[in-house]
Each structure stands twice: as C-alpha cells, then as structure tokens.
Length: 174
Image (cartoon, rainbow, N blue to C red):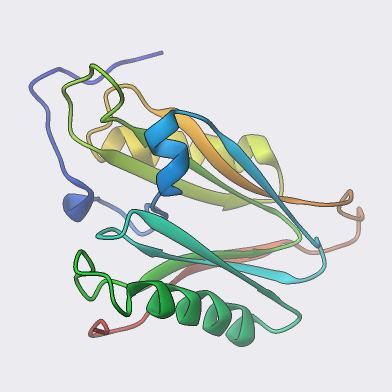
C-alpha cells in the first residue's frame, strides 16, 4: 500500500474530484468500524453527504429524483437544529444495479493527520472500492480504510445495466 508523504495535508473541505462525494457515517469513523448497508439492486440508491455533520444520508427509490430527494431531506432534517451544520447538504453519489463504497482516513485514535475520504460507484464492489481508495488518497488520506458500502441485497442479474454518477445541488442550502 503506497502511503502519502506525511507533510501532505488536506481537509474534507478541500476534497478533490467529483467522485469524492461521500462523507463517512460519523459513528463508523469514530469507532473505526466499517458498515454495510444492503439495498435493492433494481432501485436507485442515492447518498447525500454533509461534511460539517460528518454523516451520509441514504435514499432508495424506483426513480432517481425521488431517491435523491429522500437523501436530501434526511440531510436537511438532521441539520435543522444542529449548530455544526454549515449549509453543505449539497452533493452526493448514486447507483442503480451496483455498489457505492466509501473509504476514510483519520483522525483515528492516537493519529495526527487530516480527515480525508473518497467514494466510488460501480457494478462490482472491487471497482467501486478502487475508485474510493484512490479518491481518499488523492484528498490527502495517509491511512485510508474501508468505511461503508451500499451493496445489493441480492445478486445483480447479468443483463441488468449498471448506472451511476454524482449529483450536486447548486448554491447549497441552509
């Protein structure tokens, strides 16, 4: 595993690239444990993030715009009375018939390094994980570790088309 030079630093606010759009589940990062969220393969899974809250919000629906709306509304409801919220329920990642994977890097117990993360989507776990790990490292992560996966509950049918991408709410909210 190639590690970044110790002097290289970045913050979650300086995350580079469009696919680095997934903030970790706060409890997972705090306890250094990973999580797996199972979703129907034939529905859209959208994940909205808030860097300031350090939390990801999931929406699942037969329609992409509804899945995004569900995740976005969950983010806003959580942010509503939270003094840490900085109007950043603005970006997300989505997939249908595939996986979303997130990697995070510190700060973990007894580690002095900036917090960084990356996310990827794709038909296979390995593809999504490679993208997420690369994005985490590119954003300054020195010890990127698996954090969360959104995985199909059942195998994806061979003929099912995988689609996915990123989405932004321009201008921010809050």
